[in-house]
Length: 252
Image (cartoon, rainbow, N blue to C red; front, side):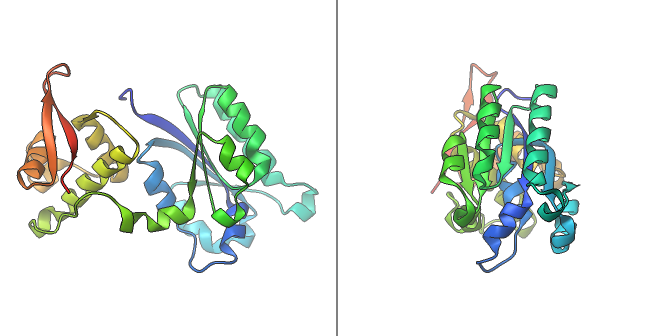
């Protein structure tokens, strides 16, 4: 594992997200969240908490993305918010038992999670919050190391920096789109320098089946060289890192 790669555990308070979706158009898309998070590191744990009888339409896409669904009885049956309690207990248990997980993602806007965020930070964990603008507490957002609004993820494709691969053969367009998206993600995460290995790791997290050989390249370096030749990126070799390629940036 590279030194710059984070390991993530994602905990989803699904009922809080559902509150945010009540007064807006469109359905919740878990892919938008996961696509953003894999840019930050390797997602190891994914759990979602709710009374799933109330949200049956969402269970299939969650299952398809290997998210463990934790069944929580309705508040009327327990007299308390069992989802919040179970999520907090599971998160702290993981923080203490799995030292290699360094980043915790709390998908909720509920201010009740602020003490959990503080405790995770006390234990040396990096905490990312993610929620809907209308249902997110300023207290929670301000307490996280980083907070992402779901609405911003919906706008991300239209605002993504860098060029779009349109003038290359159709059989290579997919790999170039993936390459440029991954480099743009590393730039957005303020990674510097951007080594070739970091780019490939990001591409494989976004698309686990990725292999440069499937697109006719003998090595990942050959793919990067082709991208530079076509005028999409700038490269240089790092002498201190064994002459490995470093991506300087995207060509506008």
